[in-house]
Length: 367
Ligand SMILES: [Zn+2]
Image (cartoon, rainbow, N blue to C red; front, side):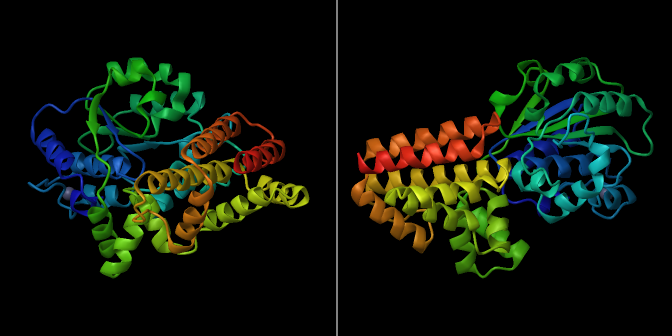
C-alpha cells in the first residue's frame, strides 16, 4: 500500500514522510484515530516505505522487489499481529484470511474481520501465545529488509497480556520497529501507550470519503456523496455500503422499533429468538447502528434540520418517532442500548437480554 492510495490524512502523511527521510525512526509508533479513518492503511503504507529500496518524496517507489512483496502483504520482514478467536490463537494461522481482508478493505472494522474468521458468538483477542510468538519472531535476524517490522492491528485486544511485550517495545533488537494501529486509546495499557510515539489521524471528511468512493469503487459523484453522508467519516462503512447497497441493520432496526412500539408479546418473543441467532459480533454492530440512529434523531429533535445521515426510509421513521418521543425518552433509549453493548460483551444470554430490552423500550415509548 502506498501513500497515494490512502484517502485524506495529508497532515499525517507529511509527518510520516519527514520521519522516514530523517535518520532516526522511533522504534514504536502508535497510529491512533477513529474507526474507518485509515490507521491500519497508514501503518501498512509506512511499513512499505521503510522497506522500499528507492523511496521518493511522495513515499515508496511501488516498483522495487521490496515494494512488490509489501504490497502483496508477503514481505518476510513485515510481521502481522491482530485479534483472532480462541484461547491459544496465533496470527500466523490466519495469514491467508488476513491478506484477503487487507486486499478487500483495509479500512474495515474488527467486526467484519471476526465475521470473516467465523467468530459467531466469540470475542476477539490477542493471546498470550501470540505475544510469545511475537517475542520469538522478533528475536530472529532480518531476512532481507532494512528493518524488522511488527505491525499490530488493534493493541486494544491485548488486554493485560500486553505486559509481556513491554520490555521488547522499550528495548527492541536493532533495526526493529513496532507499528501499532489503534482506535480506542482508553482500552490500551498505559504502559504500552507511554512507550510509543503517537501518530494521530483525523476523522475523514465527507468530501474525502466521496472522493475515495469514486476512485476505489467507480461510483458517480452523486451516489458517492450520498454514501459518504451515511458513512459519517468511516471509509470502511462507506466501502461496505457501496458494495452492499442493502443494509440489513437498517431494516432490522426499523422492524424492531415497530414491534417494540406495538409491544405484542408473541411478536417480541419471536423477534428475540431470531435475533439471538445472529451472533455476538453482529448483535454489537446492530446496537452501534441503533445508537447512530438515535443520535441522528436527537439532532432532528434539537435542530429540526432534516439533513441527517439517514436514508429516506430511516428518515421518515425518525420523523414519525420524533413526533411522539422527547429528548428525555431518547436519552433513556440510548442508555439502554449502551448497557446492552456492555452486557453482550460480557456474554449475557441474548434471548433474555433482548426480550427484556424490548419490553423496556415499549414502556419508554408508552410512558
Ligand atoms: Zn520500492
